[in-house]
Image 1 (tube, one colour):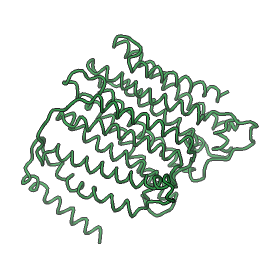
Image 2: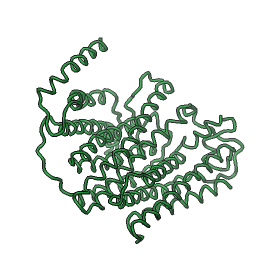
Image 3: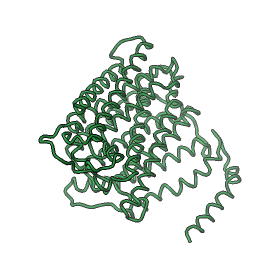
Image 4: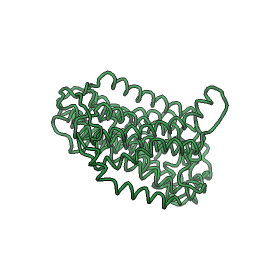
Length: 445
């Protein structure tokens, strides 16, 4: 009975996400205060429905209900309880359910946020509408291609158990933390798109940036923790003797981390100096798009990875369609609705100029990693054989933007808004740079 209840709750959540989208897009006409109240209720129903669906799936694992195909493939009566819980997100279907559940939690937190006032209430409602649209797309995907509640008949006596590589304490924590970072980038993405369609007065053009800062830093922290925990797990579990192997799945998490880092810095300038609004919106779009690309690479099995535990190109193509829809739609909206910014002559050593340079380096690094990650796929697509791009390429190209970025980061800390003199920057940082060079020599040799 539990799987049927879970299926029903998942369907209810899909309907709630659809209504959430309609309210956010203004298709259900109500005064703003009533729209906000209705949106709060719908978002809560959506989140509670997905949480309850997760509970139903967890109950099936705990009770060893092998009539559920997903449980039979990923559990065993002798599997410890903590790994039965971790098995909920240990394979494709459950991990996608975790994905949309975490998205609903981010949406609920945004709905409960006190950072919005009467002027920005419409921004909040429309951003929740975009989150509802994303959730609706992925729940449809789950129900039609990746249903974790699918029944299995005849019922097997025993399950296959969880992949031995995944029977590790790190698995209990790593996917939820990493996914919280991936999915959390949907919030600045939605706020950025909402700002394009809600702002009627130039004075309100930059208000979204102040709100989006905390909603970018939070998923960035989760993404950082997920990457660090994954590196630690891979170090002792896979045994290659290193923390980072430039594996496609590792790269898939690093790329949105780099662009999200750039977004955090860009939002500071947009919020405080009323500059770089176009760049901040574009970085929000790129960061979430890269997180969707990471989901596609991990779940499609289209690139060979030691981290990939699912390989289904058909379902991967569905994710690719969602990626194309959300990224393409966002870029079209960006090109049509972006407002012109005021022109300002930047001083070369001002803080905003150095932050801009920092963002160029971060995005260059992400772009070079993207090229190296997808190049084998492009070669195979044109029937030119199979190849892999290894650590030597990534180690070399990553240094191209990384070394100068380290240099200018030091100046950025001591620079001031609008104007900084080169002589003052050198005076403030000379001993720091000398100490850094000396320490690098000592560590190297």
